[in-house]
Image (cartoon, rainbow, N blue to C red; front, top):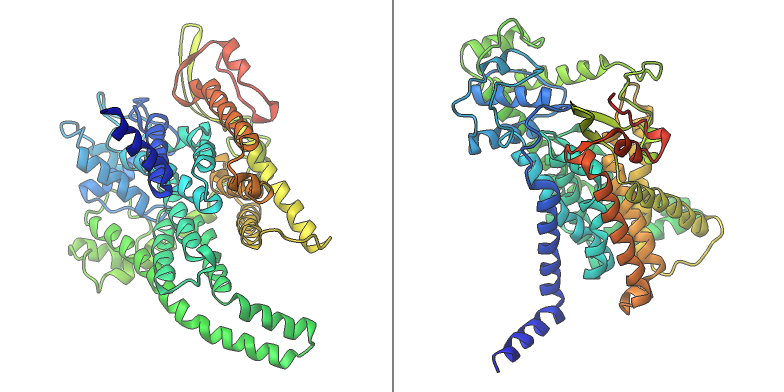
Length: 516
């Protein structure tokens, strides 16, 4: 008699889509905790850009002025984690404030504070990834299985478990994409709240890393959704009816309509960006020894007079910081493929996992621990297939005039395909060395494209929850998980023999190098 109410409650829970969505989101969060967050303080040693970001964060804590090549929000959050957890309250870290690069840390220093927020944002990013898939497919089980694309990517896990900026950045990009999808859901017209919220999230993402500007076209696309019928009418007037004058009048009308939307979004982005820099400059009231980062005499005088929090002083400090960022990027070396120790790679090679980066290694006897930036090849192959199929779908529509079965899904395929191509074109155009982790953002665009194409092709099967479809999807998710486990020693700094390491070299193009 006691079991029946439990059965009824369970049946009610799983028959309700909202409850089911919450349940799946919790499952994703729990799995993400174990893949991303669990033991994130290990290894207890610096790797990759932690050598730069940790001393920068410590300067905030000790009130020392500095300038950096990235906007401040990510490093502010790294510092905040150290302040909140305070695992190193009894350790002297003053030496961090006199340099921009540290090669070691004091004995016994914990990384749990510095890595806390980057790892936390990456962990919660899995839930946003799931929700993005759900808004695309409206199917909980398919979105849950699709979340394996984020949960079990070795490259994401190893990079986001450090005191890095990219996990925080991607969280805000996911949130911005989710805001965009919510604004156009069920053919709704976006309102001022969507533009303002997208402005807030875009401002936060850009305040972490400047390459987040790749999501700014979402505002134009959102406006296109809002005035879709008017844009179509204008297009028909110009190209079909040959009535250029009337078509241009309609375009001018739309341009006027866009001005309020610009006013609802651009100021929000600027306010967020400026406030983040105001906190950055306000905290840096002490002048570091023998290093002023090309600060102007006015900036130095402001620090000497302890006026770094003054609003009237802020324009000078902001201008100097932005000038430093611009000049820094001009001085970054170019890619040198003739250098055997070159960690950089060309963007054309990124979709194929080239080139991997050995973040950290430690040899004990005949075994070596590795922390290697290497992607899950199953996931990256799915992403590449998604881009190729997206182009095939676009060619079928625009060249061969193939009918579109679902305009909403097709348009979203074009959106993510555009974001991917725009990002990659920008990276190819940049005249400086770039690294494989710069592909982590377009990788997500490629995965969303793959998921959209899959949903577009198998839409009827998805609506019917067909076992013929979900069993192969489950098998792919299992394959992704098993591949993740296979490469996990390189992700979690586990010991490997030379033979075990060699088994991980699935492609010579990855350039995985065994430590001898």
